[in-house]
Length: 386
Image (cartoon, rainbow, N blue to C red):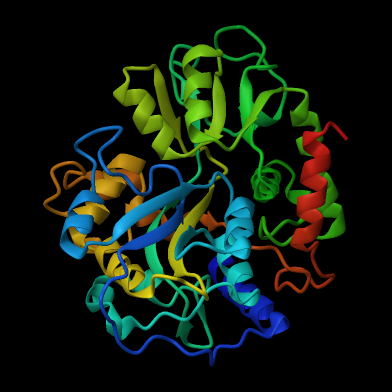
């Protein structure tokens, strides 16, 4: 069974175990806009031209709909879940390690595709994706997807690093200096999966089949790797802009990153590039989901439709280094160019281990797996040096 098929089984198990109510009422018709829409989003996902005037997909929406867009950025999926639990937001651009938690926690409402005319243009690989579809009911609109990349300083690495070992194991880098204090790592609990993915290739005797489905022994090995990495990491990151500054000013040589940071650094003429090493990569497939108590549902539906128009999708993919959820965006976009989708990994969908919430009852391990709440507490311990 492929990791994608196992993901579907495991996510279905999570939904069933949580007793998700798929019969919840969904909106049947749209009314007038309420004047605003409040969105929790990843950095760089909703731009109004403030950073670069070429990237603005908010201004025209506000002019057309009279719905003012208010944005709250979040650096981790856990932060997004916490904000949605607190309430006061209409939409969230949730990754797969948050979406099922939001559904099972009844924090988001079913989406009616019939109220989104462009739904039919969404990539068929995403339309019924298990991280937003439960029991045939959709709880969101696919937004963008991509891989977590290894960003590196080209003055240090004349050739792209072949392995994630440069951030996980102490070693001298090609410039002859140790990597100690010169690498970074993501500070979210889901980063444990990156360690597990590396160990799938480094130590095949552990029998890891899926980086999100770990037995106690496999999980311990991943934590041991992260504890060793802790002695190398100069700073853990989740704020994209802070990481950008660190690459520019703090001597960071290599780190897990998003294409977004790499794009901005390259635009600033910094000696930064990125690669997907031989072990592969984790990744994200993000979905715009609506809060169960959204105060501005009509403006929210207007944004859901707007979010998948080809111009926005192509511009965002060019800006973030991601892949559009609408294939039509891959052609004719001046910013993305016709080669952009292939460059950003359009054909790598089946090779990416997409983020998702680990559950105790898993498909790949007969002994069961370590659930997410353990990942949360243990990653906090790792960050604290324990």
